[in-house]
Length: 603
Image (cartoon, rainbow, N blue to C red; front, side, top):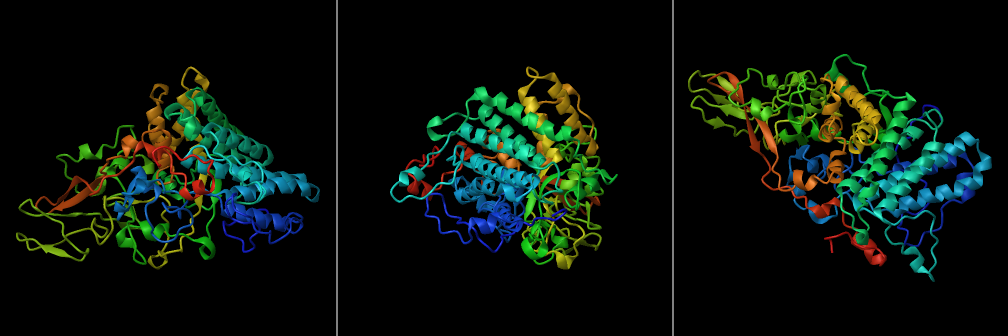
């Protein structure tokens, strides 16, 4: 299986039911001997487990996983990173039904594997047996973490439950406390890290390694630490963690991150000397020293539509474009190379630009690697987001239905395009004057920009996140714990900043807010920001009641230059109340299990 990629596809042979653990399981299609006696049977079983892994990738949205079509809101739409062209569909996001994931079918199948495989241990070399068992512990931890970050404490089911019509109460397991869930996740990941191989040569690309287990542990433990430090304990509703445990979780997160770094097996992607292009290439490269755990896509099997949905209008293929537009608030999180803030909204005051791209000079290389901005070069062409014209009398003309619409000057008689080729407007879908660059494949021809065609792989875990998880944990622990950890964290953050061309930080500058901002920039549009805002317990302050802002360039005919203006662009108000730090336990699950308690404010 060396170098073989495991694709996340559903194998046609279904071994076990996807039903909830309270339902009656059907008879197995194949016997245990048929599945567990051969490597091919185990590989097929494992493929179903990977296929069901709740990775929040290109095809994840408010309705769940593996969705096709432009769909409803995605995580960047609700984090303030980007707005959707039809983003008024998020006004009901407070009902607790978004991002659903209450699926004990997944837990049952992987637990069955953990319980059954040991009976067939003698059939396989220890190396393969340990790797498979390690994968199973990794997958179970991954699934539990995905549920716990949504709901808080959930039922902890460590064994396969057997249906007994005379004892249904034994199946009605109550929710565990949130701390107990995180401890269980940590235990499974410790087992996984011990059993899994240190490289992909044994199991193949796309399969978990020990370093994926360490990375997931750093992610989960820093989350648990924040719940303890910034959340509220409500044991009655199985949510929250006592604050006394915060430091212990942060230390576990730091240790897990340090284990990956100390291995020396990973490094940041630095294959292109052009720092802007280098960062953009990171997400398209077929191989990278930064990749730790990757979900692969294949055109004829499970392709996605990232390019067709989010590409600027002038490059569109089969009809869609500009489906997710970065906000000015997010764009201003970046810095200039000398470390000064981007501060676009201030810098445009009283300033005109011959070329709109001049506003974005000398920025963090991750800016262009993440965002297509006015007059930036994309696919060898200038991407024009011109919103309209400033006429000779100073009035605006911005009503246009296409780029072809012209305005004839009453003074010079010259003709001007009212809007840019990708200009902001209902015809283009663009709402903010920016588009997403990250993960966009600029090598696709126009005819290739269509649904279910893109096959960029999703980098679920990469070395940059390891740095960020570890650095955040070190800063949260503070100087009272270990000055060496803070110094190490500074080295990690400065490695990220060096790749982006930014000025290095000094130790006093390594604050909690600075590390958080580095995380927002580095992991932009990677479906982490929304969960970060939740665990930091600042989403109700940063999102609730928010109207996000656009940055629009206008061409001034009289002065032959460009003027930028800002504007609040959503006509509705974003909603995030404190109850939304946890999702609603599905009503159907509570009706089946009277021992489940609902999360606060959802009754």
